[in-house]
Image (cartoon, rainbow, N blue to C red; front, side, top):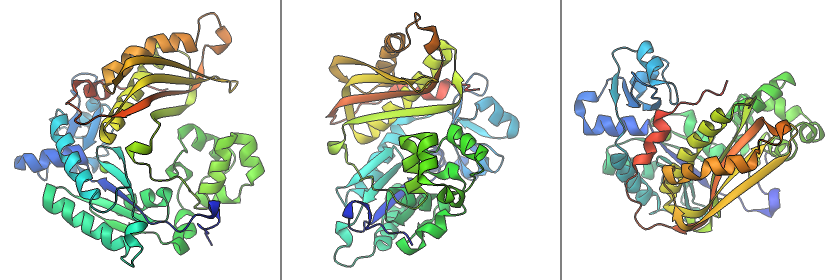
Length: 378
Ligand SMILES: [Mg+2]
């Protein structure tokens, strides 16, 4: 049995994860009725190097998904309608959705423009069921924005997020504490937060494919193989996740990092990878209404030595271009040409810290970077 009480003596929490369905594409279909029922792909130019940002469920039936090149998407579904992103419209819809969520608790943590965690523990103290709140939120979002959202309800972030995905699109799913372990057991390990492609590969070589397999691995083995991350794997396999829902006020930094299935050796690829991450960090900063003065990058070398290099500016920034402008200098400091043994990396990350609240974040053209530059990590 999962015991959420055992960790840090915390009380049983009620967490909701709300995730808009095919968000960018859904906004396009809402605003352009002729696109309803059509395979719609929001993203870059299929004739150029553009990538798919979001596609409608009609397009997903053809095997199209986010981050695929737009050219590949077109070859899978030649009749698809390609639409360039209208970030202003998505931001406006996002503001409306987040506003609805904040009616139920101040503890709202947006993960991007279209998804957020809510801690409704206090709101349920008087006996209101978390699932009732989730139901009401979904109905209000649909009524007030004309868009649908899926929601997951559980006792921590890990399970709430997996639950919202379970009945997508336009679904609601609850994982009560007594069902947590059984719900997790058959899932592939790659579904777990923090388990990326490189880890999936390594676990698979150890004969670990499902969360149940992972649960059967000893803590010692996992720590020996993965260090601190191994302890996290040990806990999430047991449905334990004590990460709090963090509002922007409590947040110290916004970052994004990735471990690669194969080490990156080409500095150009490293830089374009960092640039793509900058787009993700910028999108998250915007969703949270934050900007920061310090940009740092992290690099981990094949021997696991890890370095971070930071640049602090007088002005708080959040735009993709402003973050990108810091990257070449930081990369050169992290990976000096004079150290050939550090010429390849297994992990890269970008973080913005020294955060301040931004009242009204103006529209950003730089968001396009994310959509125009696919990164080949092979
Ligand atoms: Mg979504």
